[in-house]
Image 1: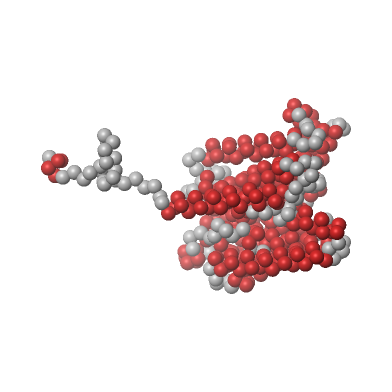
Image 2: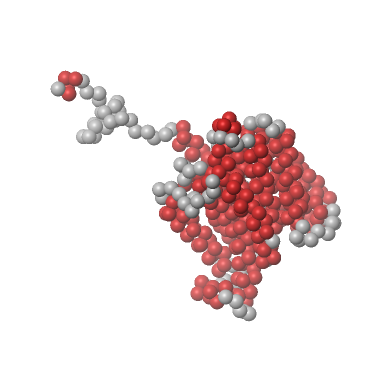
Length: 367
C-alpha cells in the first residue's frame, strides 16, 4: 500500500488545501518582504532572480534560505508528530515528551560545551544518535509490552532526565557558549544559510520513502495491538520502526535549528480536525503541510516583533501550538462524546413538518 495522489482526500479537500496554501503563500510573502530593509513586492521578482544590489543579497542569501528551512523543518516536525501519535495511539505523544528532541539537543550541545571540534556535516549524526538514545530509552524503560500510555509517561521522565543533562552542560559552559546554547535550545532560524538547507536533503531522501512505507502500518496500529496482530503486523516492531522514522525526521532539524517546540503537537491536531473521517495515510500530508505553515507563521513575530532584536522561533511556536492544540484536543473529545445524531422523524422531540415537536401518533389518529 502506498500514499495515493488523493492523499488530501475528503469532501472539501480542495477548499482546505487552497486555504492552507494561501496562508503559507501570504506568510512566505511577508517573510521575504518585511524587515530591515523593506523589500517592496514589485521589487521581489528582480531580487529573487539575482543581482548585486542590497535587496537581492538580503532576499536571496538571508531571507529565502531561512524561509526554505522553516518550511522543511515544519513539515518534518509535523509529520514526525503524527507518526509518534499514531504509533502510540495517544495525541499527547510528541517529540518533546518522548525524549527524542531532548536527546538530539544534548547530542549537539555536549561537544560545544566540551570544546570538541565537530564538522558541520557531523552534527546531524550527533543529533541522530542523541535522538535514538532518548527514544530507545523511553521504549525500553516503559517495557516492550506496556501500553502506549505507559510509554508516554516514561517518555516524560526520560525527557526530564535529558533536560537535566542539558542544564549541566549550561552550567559548565562559559559565557559565550552559554548564549549560543541558550538560543539553540529555544530553537532559532537566525543566521541560517543555503548550506544549512542543503544539509537536510540527504536525510530527507532517506526519511520520505520510509515515511511513505510507514503510513499504512500506522493506520493498522490505530486498530489496536490485537487487531494489528490479526492483520499480520507486529505492533512492537512497528513502534520501533515508527520511532526510527520520526528520529530521522527530527534529528537533522534539531541539529540545524534546535528543538522547535510543539509543532508536532499542533500540526496533527489540525490535520485530524480538518479531515475527521481520514486515517494516517490521509492525515500525513496534511500534518506536514500544517507544520510548515505553523513554523513559517511563527517565524514572522520571531524576526519582527522586537526588531532589531530577534527572538527564538521555538518560543513563538510554543506560545502558539500549546494553547491551540489543547483547544483542538478538547473540542474534538467533546464532539466525540456528544455526537449530533438526529432522532428518527416522528420520535419524541423531533420537529414535525409544521415545526411542532413530534408526538407518536395513535392508531386512531392514523385512521
